[in-house]
Length: 368
Image 1 (cartoon, rainbow, N blue to C red):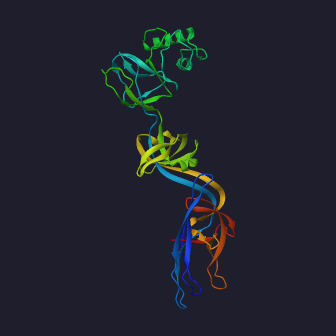
Image 2: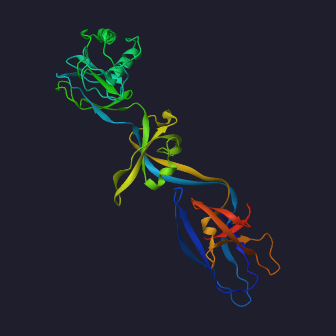
Image 3: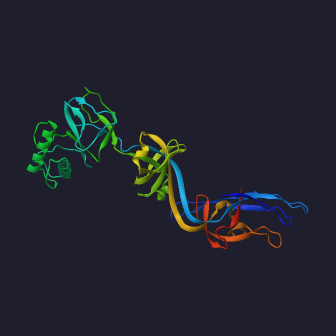
């Protein structure tokens, strides 16, 4: 916190220029400090009359040096996609928008028979039937049948009599013909439960590969940052999220994507996509597809001596100093002294001091 202090020079002196380094340090482990010099000139005194010069001061502190960025993101349901079927027929039933489909649940109906959601990363690419070749998709199906209570064995990649009998039990529970095989398009694999975002078809339309639009069941925040800022956002990093109206919540970086090219105000630029998971999903209740503010923070050092960058004075030898206020005037009447210092890392307008006779609690002069 800065204060206004009145400094009264003891003797007239010539105009002098204060050189202030405005520096910034990139967030990479090895980064260059870009600096500019700001000239601030104090009024010169005339004759023997004492001048009163108002200056701004700050207190030297000890603590953590943190790098922060604020950017905007989009809060909404994750992983939007269209779902349909390879079955031939007519759409005879659609789910309500906003409803959820769980593993084993109905997505929609074709010729009055349900198309069912199951969990798995592999998409359905063939029918399941006796004589089919072994594959990871068979094991994926058996795991789902086991979860639903129809398969009582360890899942493997072979379609055998145990698999066929489990399918028949499953078909019976749905009112389907008990064939022991599953035609292509009767089930849809998705990584998790889905939420119906919109209908892409109407009852009476021909079946197609885009019947409903779905999302993941949980809301996330999607953010795009500059590649140089990526060290602030590793997977697992905590972030602060400000919702419309000023309410704050927290989130966690759950995924860092590969850099992509995005259109911006100044043309195309390369950005890194982040996915943030809300720590308290209830905080986003009633909110969807809205802009939020995200704050990413990285601690660059702990228990460091810190001063504002605007307190730095460039010296003729290329080093830096700060002007420290004396607790009482010196014998010559001076109220400040110049203290040479050595600089460490920069972040958010602060610089770490690694050398010099400067102490926490000292008061330094800064530029207005």
